[in-house]
Length: 431
Image (tube, rainbow, N blue to C red; front, side, top):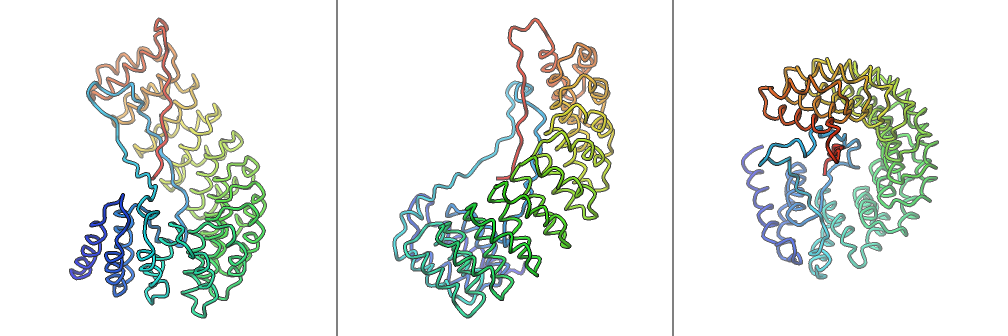
């Protein structure tokens, strides 16, 4: 990035950060930041918007609609295995209650309202998101009025604001916007309908799935997933056959979000899709749904050419927790990718089947300590006396973490313990 945009970004960020997050935003500072951003290019504005949103306590999503597939990954090492004095990973979660925005005065909201028709699209969108999320007085009427403007950019901003406002009254004007002549307006309207999350909008979104423009169809598929309604299954099933990989991918993600087992037969064919991102989305969705009917097809993906698809398939098999996956996961324990091997050990621990003992015992000699730790944890989950000798050998492992994991696992197997503790590892998701 050239020096002057970087300096510009730092200035905007500094102005934003001057405002404490638990106090009402100052209208003069808000106006100063927006004035700076009005003359910036789109890249700098997007970066500044993210910095400002973090400082003021609201999230910024620059994409038309949020990227699907958070791709949860397991944390195979349970807390009882941690060495004395050590600590597991710590994640700070920002809980945004927006106290400052609720207390903002009309002058502050006026500073944002003044740029809703700005020539800079990024600035308009910042204003629409702030006013919508804060539920500023009169914002509904302002956004609806923007939908009637001649300039498509203003109509897009109106649709965006209505989605952030999440007011059910907006469904009617947004339905009209889904027929707008501008692709970006129609796509933003579909996204807004999904943000509102009213099940009565299934019909209008189903119609949008037939739009000529792929971005509109993709936004409609995403929105149907947000509704989490079984009524949407039929429409999304059709979207799984769309010519656009982006639409197929998003439709698969949406079915995973709905988590209805009736979607399994719709998703299985996508595991053979020519596009790796579509296979990934379908795999993730089947892991969310957790139906044993998907085990055989998912098992075939542990050899997929895409490392992301392969890992997702292993994760999904662990989530489904069916003994029929042991053979495929045992193969994955020998994969060239150490992350895949670690994930396979975790998945076998989830399934908790005696047939996994021998493959896991062999994994205690893996060249990667993380794989050996996961294998020890999995053997502790299975709690079979057949694992005692391999675990005792692992007590002399060169890695202290492996030693602790083996000790923890042996404690689980010890039948003389008055209380046997089973630990199910948490699943990390992006925040």
